[in-house]
Amino acid sequence: MMSVDATNKPSSSGIDNSRIGIALGSGSARGWAHIGVLQALAELGIEPMIVAGSSVGSLVGAAYAASQLEEMADMVKMLGWRDIVSYLDMSVMGGGLIQGDKLVRFFNKYLKEKNIESLPRHFSAVATDLHTGREIWLQNGNLLDAVRASVALPGMFTPVKQNGRWLVDGGIVDPVPVSLCRAMGAEVVIAVSLNGDIIGKHWRNNHHNDQQSEMQKTVIQNKNALWDRISDQLGKSLQDKKNILLSRLFGDSLNSPGLLEVVAGSINIMQDRITRSRMAGDPPDIILSPRLSHFGLMEFDRGSQAIEEGRACVERMRSSLEHIVSVQ
Image 1: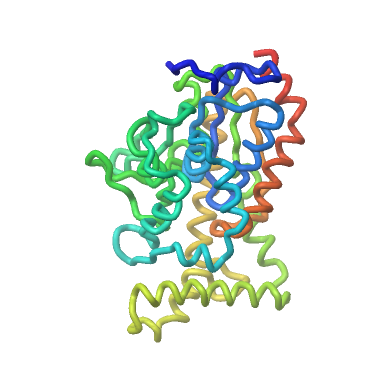
Image 2: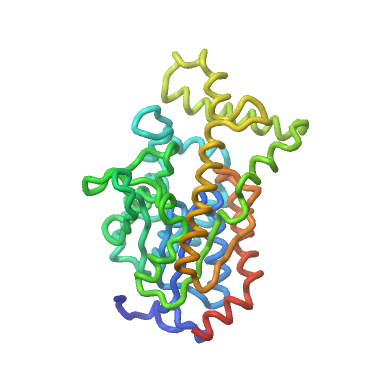
């Protein structure tokens, strides 16, 4: 199924990486933890040659499969909130709040114009057919096009049309693509699940102490920064509706959820249930679950923390990982 070259021969540790697959799960900003997971695995001599990604897992997985993970890690660590806002091309048309074109152009700096077939590792992304609800495996063609379809979170990013189909986030049907990994030829599957401990926790953890003035300042600053971006796109005529729109997006106060948090919380619940069901029927050889309950949907500016937790997760499971890859 795969061509044989120097990159998929056994590592110096004696591990046959060509037999190992990694399923990188969905989870929005928590997905930066995948970077730390992959870095820490490499330090153990575990460098999977088969990569399946869903949603943000497809983005990190694409960088890894293209041998550009370190470049992505450096970029992620430098991201600030204002940087993130500048890449959000807001829109009230097209089926999502964010068009996503600016993000694609930004990540093109790191992933370049590459075809999936040309990558040094075997890669596939998961998307969902919006019309039929079917799981779509994107295994060839333009790498960025596949990633853009896989990350099209409903309500947030506009869907993507490919080959006559409208595609949305792969996490809707397969949040942690273990089955895809096996179908790609993996004999040993490492699954990275980002949603196991986050149902309801982010909202409670971030809202239980609304007397903290610093938290309030941060929330207000972030709201205003995002509003500046929205107003640039929609024009001055909406300025008088600023407070109404912000309250609906972020909530009336720190004690009530807004649109983004309701969407995120609902998707978290759905993906956790789907993940549990699918893994019960097709369990991976080992599951890595970074502790990310304190991360929110759009906190992409906390990349360094997420990466470190990804590394810590691997360290906690080190003995199990070494046993699994040595005996299979």
